Structures are given as C-alpha cells and as structure tokens.
Length: 286
Image 1: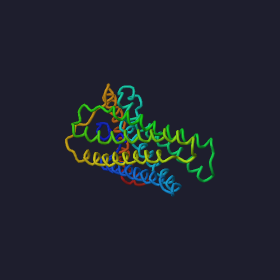
Image 2: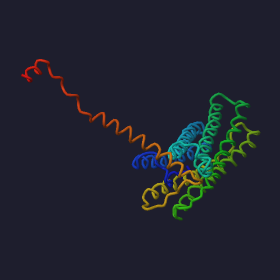
Image 3: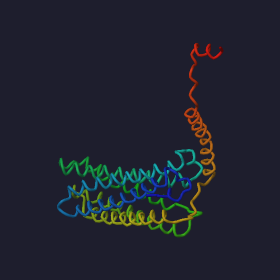
Image 4: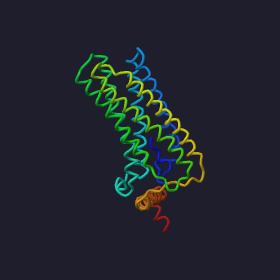
C-alpha cells in the first residue's frame, strides 16, 4: 500500500476516470482483506479454527493482489523503464521495493497458513509444522521490511496535508507488521510444546490485523482527499529520471503521430478514376 503513484507527475497509467476507479477499488479491496484477516484470526481463538484458516487464505490472496496492483501502477507510471531505478533511489527503494516486499510477504504467509490448514485436514507432520512456523516468521519479516522502506518516502513539493495523510497510512502498517512478526516468533517458541498455534500468536496477529484495517481506512480517506484536491503540487522523479522519462516519451510521440497520419492518409486517399472504354474514346475524338 505505497500509493505514491497518486502524488507523482509521471502517474499516467490510464485515463483519469479509469485510474481513479482502480484506486478506489484497490483501497476498498484492502479494507475488505483486512476485515477477513481480523475475522480469520479471531476464529483461531474459538472452536471453528478450520474455517478461519480458509478466511485467512482468501484475505492474504487479496492483500497480495492489491500490492501487485500498486507495483504495476508504479511501473506503468514510468513506462516500465527500469533504467530509471538507477537514477531515483526512492523510485527503487520505495515505489518498487515496498509493494514487491509486501506481495512476497503475503505469499509466504499464505503458504504458512496453507500448511496449517493441510495439517488440520491430514494430521500432524513435524516437518510440515517446522516449515509452517518458519514461513509465519519470514512473511511478517518481509512485511516489516517493506513498512520500514515505506517510511522512507520523501516529499519535496507536496504540502503538509498530503504528508500527514501518508503518515496515517504508514504507521498502522508498520505497527501491524511488527505485531505479526512478534506473534510468529512467539508461535515458534510455543510450537515446541503443542503442534497447534498458540493463543499468543492468534492475539498478536488479531491486533496486527486491526492495525492493517486502520491503515486501510486511512488509505481510503487519503485516496479520496487526493482526488478531490485541486492545484496540488505533484512530486517529480529525482536524479535526472524525470528528464529521462520526458525524453523517452517525446521520442515516441513523433513515431505515433507519423503512423496515425499515414493511416489517415490511406483512409482519405480518393479512389482511382474508372477506366474509360476504348469505344467511348473513339466516339469522343470524332
């Protein structure tokens, strides 16, 4: 949930209507996924833990898809010119690295929850249990690393209101990722006594899900406010990346215009005159 693409001048990855619609859908899906995670971990404290694991799998899949959209949106904003990552460090460490880390963390955590679900269906396996414990630590660790990277966003042109909105999104994600990691570590300690994840893991993960939900709600407010603000000063790429992107786009425009002009010329070309019969020619001469 980086969403720095909404404050970039190079955010053109579609028409304004399509872009705004996808931003709202993306933000709404993350809130829905956070609700699923909250309900799934709450069910781990009840007797219906099995169905709760299915809900967790659905929620994690949505979180991975949302962050995948962020990654594609940021890359589309720079026309997929990966060479610009070497010029702008924030572009590489924040706008590309953060959604990638969040997506990988969601995928790893998904595998851990899936292993727990398989054990409940087929019975306990010490090897599978060890793999599940490791993935439930590695996934939140990637989340935490991505959240720390996300705090490294630097605004030079945006006003204080935009920065405050961004902090209200970043801090809950950081706290939630930290609670998930601590819960995974506690789970690795408790798993030596019982093959079933302990209550400490469930409570800490539930608290982390609530922080994710809070961050998702603030993100909805941020997306709404960003699209309602007029005259906002958008951020430029740094390190010469903005100039390089403009040069690349200007180099493509003449080719596009020439191709369009050629197609219009072919469509507007008049049909060839009809051939005159030889008999009519002789009559005309006489």
